Length: 94
Image 1 (tube, rainbow, N blue to C red):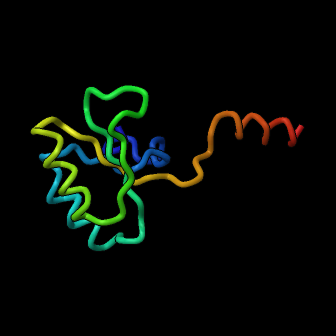
Image 2: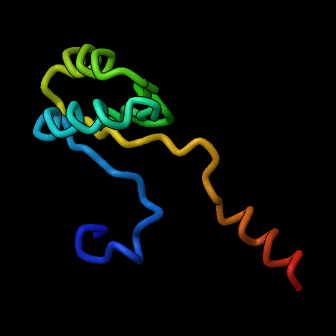
Image 3: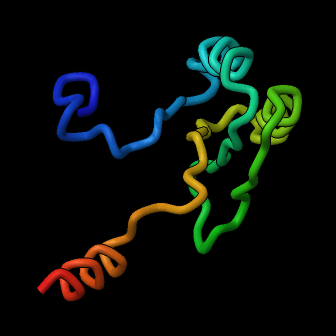
């Protein structure tokens, strides 16, 4: 969605579908090395298999253990603006 409606979806972190976006992720991590990335295997639930990385080599090793399944990798947002926080801000403005 952010590809076509960038302004409306600029809050959403860049997402990589692995294995097909692995080389794109590698290039992006070279230029944005200070960021942390969240690794989400498909078919997981209740946080099972979710990992945080800040080096490409770590993600590459984790992909090997995914046994060919698709994985989502996104830039991790440290302090997201949650709806609950937004509601509190609105109450304070009134």
